[in-house]
Length: 140
Image 1 (cartoon, rainbow, N blue to C red):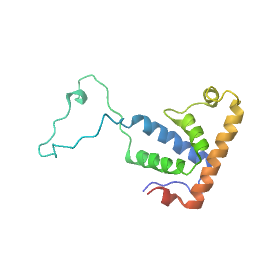
Image 2: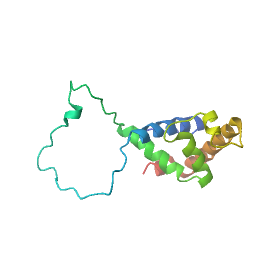
Image 3: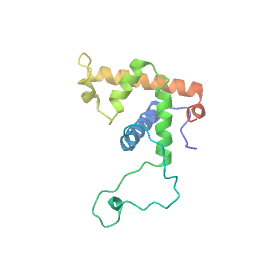
Image 4: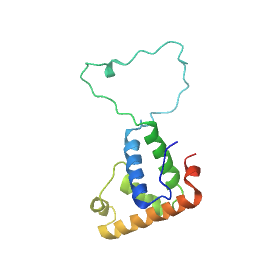
């Protein structure tokens, strides 16, 4: 179980969404159509030579269970928002965290200060919903 501050504040939710954005970038993407597993782990699998020590290749970064749990919590919380609020959260945080000036390029008719105020208003409404529903309900 992860510890999330109660009552939830905008700053805390902002940090959780940053963690969720990072985890979302590290999770594997779905590949093709799903297939039935035929191996059933009867034989021990050999480690891939791609990740062997001394091979000089990259190290795969894997999110921790706590980070994945924060990612699930933030997804459950974002589902409680309206579609317009979800769109603003998606453009601000996914696939990476954007600044308000970068976000302004997607909303040409609004200034970056207006976008910042709207984003904070969205986060404060989500904090109010999370505090009303209960954080433990969203962690399920």
